[in-house]
Length: 326
Figure 1 (cartoon, one colour):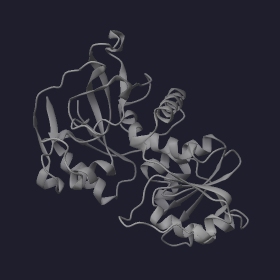
Figure 2 (cartoon, rainbow, N blue to C red; figure 1 turned 30 degrees about the vertical axis):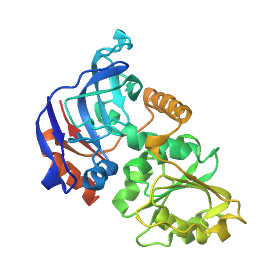
Figure 3 (cartoon, rainbow, N blue to C red; figure 1 turned 120 degrees about the vertical axis):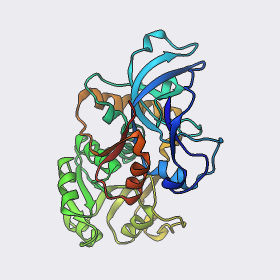
Figure 4 (cartoon, helix red, strand yellow; figure 1 turned 135 degrees about the vertical axis):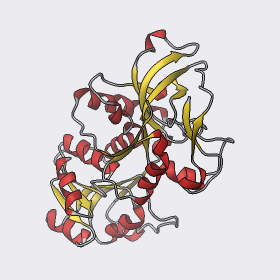
């Protein structure tokens, strides 16, 4: 099969290779998926650059969409031919979705509605699930004000939609008018350009001075300062899935304690079985209902995986970046 891989850490142009390798076989409890589209996420490029290799060769990417072509022992043969989306494809294992085939435990290949594209499938594992879990951890949000940091980014785009579907008034930070328009199409009621506006002051102005009830956060290194400045209302929640700083960020305890603020941190790769099961069930229901908009910012053929990784690193593409495999 055709695949992309790397055998050492480094820059995309220095380490990524496209070639032929042996097609995997579905083992017990596994399914063999013929991959149509592979999703590229920031965590994939970070892994390639710096995460220690767990095997001599790594096929990258955790997300993808395709069709089950074979099943291993213990898996119902009725799954053959099923359209699926894949999560945690390359998490804790060397074989990811940037190949024509991938063998994964059957629970990691989730049934995809017939009218949902493989492009959307390649966005569900990390962006879709992260957005869902971030919104879930905000608690009951109907009628409440929710601030989504980076509302035009891949996770923020889904989080804004999911929060709006739950009846929240969504406020989103963006960095341009183009991104503001993109965010508004996802259900964001008010946008704040963090490059030209004081985010905390605008949040308070939009909420009658009270602050938002929850913040969905992808960069705690800067969001922590919003807490100090009163952007989060008393008894509010920060639902955080990332930080742009490699250094530890001080938590503003003297603000959090008297205001009874809740900090919810999570790693989407490491949900509990119960959390994962619930998220998969609910996200599948959203896909079946057809209520989510999927933003594909750029697509590349497998032969251009280097360009795809560089595009993710440059951060200029609005929307998800995918690779056509089939």
